[in-house]
Length: 453
Image 1 (cartoon, helix red, strand yellow):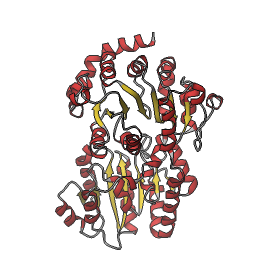
Image 2: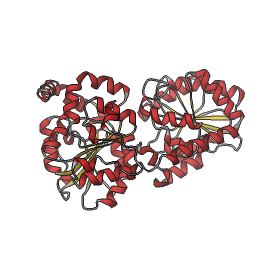
Image 3: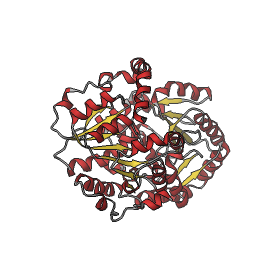
Image 4: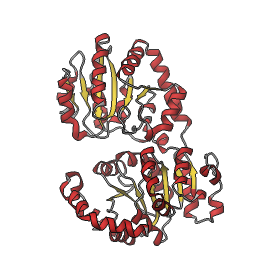
């Protein structure tokens, strides 16, 4: 009944879905693939494959180390990564060349996903974080393809929506053979939504294993570092993955900070770089000189050499994780506005103090760990931001100590990928449910009673 209702609804809104795909520029690339036309190179791959679905940039970046490990561990099965967004595709192309093939995720029409499953013949399907497409999962189950959720999480916003369709979610989640969750909190939520308790385990957040030592800087990254041209006395504040409204708060705070510390330079990296031109206008409206990274290297270096307060606008993809290293203090966006927060571990991996706002639903556990260890600061408003920035600039030894504590958090919680691979091994070996539910050494697996408690 639930699937019938879902598919009737999809048919009714299909003209709207196809219309959006046709009119949205970011969706036009790969349009026919999204509608079921599978690229020839994927049709010609050796079968079966391991199919990994990761929605966008963040999810793909998270699984890069996992896929490198899987390539070595399972060389007999080609890896195929499907994404919804173009930014996700770019990460696959740049960071997984020779490791995995890319395709756009099919729209969840039953005939579209069934064609993908029949052509790709997946030996295993891996779902990253929280993309539960009913027809896709049902088709995989019907074709007896094992399904594994890795780095699973259920945000408060998603949970409040899913609970309204709990009956449907129970059917959807019953298709998943193994759910490897980021935290006990996430495990309890997916259990409340109807996941089979014995299939749910807590292994941690794979972002702890997203080590920058595994991602070698390109010439462009090295060039960026060289062309910042900061004076020895200048202090760089890096604000990454920012959103509207909190950007205005950052610029107002910067204005107050430089009144007392004119040696401070602000670097801003908007979460969506297509907003860069709009953000540049906002920066200039506040009276600041704006230097865009997308200018030629020579021009960028010449502009960046000027003295005095200025805002560097990082309007390129892939460089933010490396530029965090140059920050004296960092701020991670999506936290001063109700977005839920972005990757707090990217600056922590470089041993940098991490500042963030009150909206951290997407990264609540990591925020808690950073706060508990003294490696992060949670601010509530502009006044807090100015106060903490001023204190750390005045007392640099405190900032250095915070950075060391942040790095220790990352080091302490690594090893998630190894735990996930142990569970995936068991799933591929098709052991019985009893052996599959046994805890893995070093993991924080929880029992069904704990999930339902």
